[in-house]
Image 1 (cartoon, rainbow over the protein chains, first blue to last red):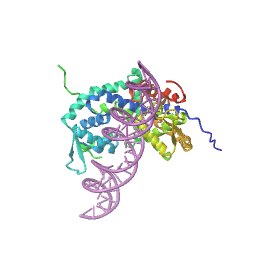
Image 2: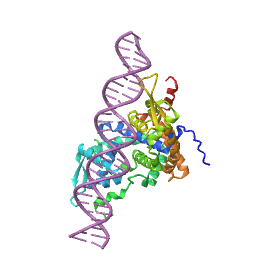
Image 3: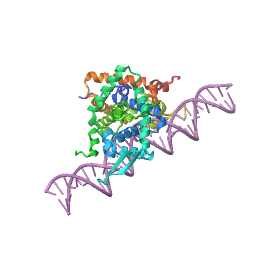
Length: 170
Length: 170
DNA sequence: GCCATATTGTCAGTATACTGTCAATTAAAT
DNA sequence: ATTTAATTGACAGTATACTGACAATATGGC
């Protein structure tokens, strides 16, 4: 017969779970980013979107979502905010009336250039407590893990999608 | 004079940043949790809260927030939802009219017992793609990093706070 | 050309997260 | 004891995230 004796629950069920640790590190990462970049009025997500629009001028929202693996619905609001701050502009695509193409404004390119050192500082700070060798190990394992689990999230990363707006066929 | 020549921005500014990788892993971790625990109507945060109330019956919201390092404001809504699902109850504290003490209901204890295997499965799955030795390494480094960066987040983990409701002096 | 299908942006709804504020209440200072 | 501080739960406001739906538009099969 199946034993229904309940295992005594301890806080280890939370503290040692990788999911909990990833959540904590995400909180910490965002906190450090916001702290270092306070003067630029850009969130981590907005920064990632801005970088991607910079490297892929004329990308549309759907492809942008695939390239940084952010939800399409979420990205709509992010784009709105970047547009409100006048860091990007949206232009209707001539060949497809559904699509709106994204471009950096001068202000957007400017803020991106200026914020870079602060972003670097935040990224450095979050791994700082580890020994240099451990930083490399963690980053390597984390990169592998994200890549190998790519399909597990709703919006898998599709870096190659970024090239489609340049006229490739899928 | 300072060179204002802008460094060409590449997607590496996003893809290799630890902050981005932590965000991706958090997304993936939540997605796997939700998938494995679909039948239980509990989110990762609600699960963590339930575990903590189980191991600390009679804890209040502020101490709960310190023990799992979740924001106090956020936790208010989480508690409301757990209460709506009748997994917990809130009782006013006799000695302090501000405080409401949290307790598991029978249904709460039941769901916690039943969900455990699915939670375990989700936690296992998210590290599965790595070799066993690498899983151990990553978990160890992650645990260290979260601990060493504890003060960087708005709500640092204060595990010892959990004992106060048992009558300690701070 | 027509029709089933897919894509795009958008929206409503729910659930974290954080900032800042507030009233009620308690504790501390003197 | 009275003023001052701090604490507690709550709230409003902003910003990710995901689900599921929708109209407008494109595309494919035929």
